[in-house]
Structures are given as C-alpha cells and as structure tokens.
Amino acid sequence: MTFDPFNDRTARDIRNSLSTALVGELTANSGSGVAATADRWLSTPLAATHRRYLQERTQRYRQVLEDIRAAGIRAPLLQAVALWNAGLYFELHELLETIWPNAAEPEHTALKGWIQAAGAYLHLQRGKPDAARGLALKARRNLTAGAEALAYIVNLDRLIRALEQPEPQAPRLEADEKRLAGPWPPLPDRGEP
Image (cartoon, rainbow, N blue to C red; front, side, top):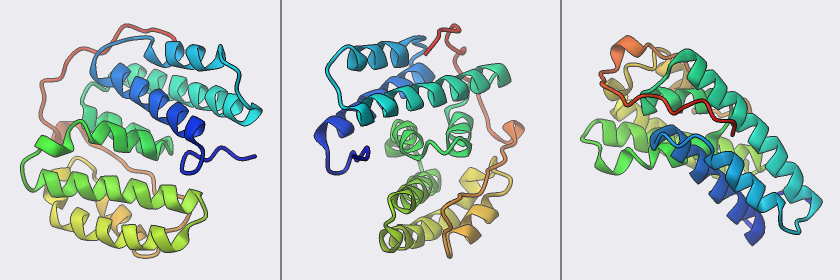
C-alpha cells in the first residue's frame, strides 16, 4: 500500500494537517505545531504506510525548519524557496496560498504560476506526466507574465525553461534576499518539530 492522499482520506487528512502545521510554524511564530500534529496522529491506530509518511515528513520538516532558522530566513517568499529546494511542493503551495490571494499584480500572477509549477512536479512524482505537462504549460505562462515580481529568484528563467519539458527533478532555485523588501516578523523560538 502506498501513501496516496488523492485516493485515501486518512492520507489526505495527515498530509493536510501536517502541512498546515508547518505553515503555522513558518507564519504564525508557533514553535511546535508539526511535532504536536505528528504526535496526535501517531497516537492513533494507523497503517504502516501512514506511520512511515508521518515519520519521514516530520524529519524533512525538522530539517527544512532548522535550515530556515539557521539562515535567519524570515520572509515567507524566501521560506518558499527553501521549501521548493527541499522538494516540499505541496507545502510550498500551502505557504503561497497564504500570500497569493491578496497579492497585487504582477505578483499575483507570478505566485499563481509558482503554485502551478509545484503542482506539476507533484503530478510527476505521482507518475502523471500528462497532468504535469498541462499544469507546467500554465505555470510557464504565469511565471513569465509575472517574472518581475519574482526577481529575488535569480534563476527563475531556469525554472521557466525546465517547465517546457518537466523532468522529475525540479531545478534548484537561488534567491537573493536583498532583492526582496521587508520588514519581516521574528523567527519562532527554536522548538523541535
């Protein structure tokens, strides 16, 4: 049995609650949401597949949170780059959903494209290349149209090119914090996720 949040309600609930907890730690300065959420799930009867996902994802979240804190990254858009580079595409989508709806143009279009790019790579991970190509095309259009709003991603052009024929491995993004205006809230206290 594979962990499939698209066809298994428990898997979907686990994925959604964990990613919400991660976004909460990044945006609301709460320091232990991921650990508490994982512990709640692990205290219930679960299939081995669900337990493995919880353990693996919690470890990946712990690492990305540690990396973000060690680098002093407070800007949510730079945190999104860290999530992308960690291959946490669903979580990137969740974080950007806290910003995208209220963003002005061209940022609104650019963030929509980034969310779509994340979706394309999720489809590739699921073995759905046709769905990935369709979403990648939309992502390319939106990223190209709003590229000036994502100028802090210094190699955005590489992602846009990669979306022409997306491969399973997404390109790593490089960010320049100086190109992104602040101020940003303080980082949450170092809590163990």
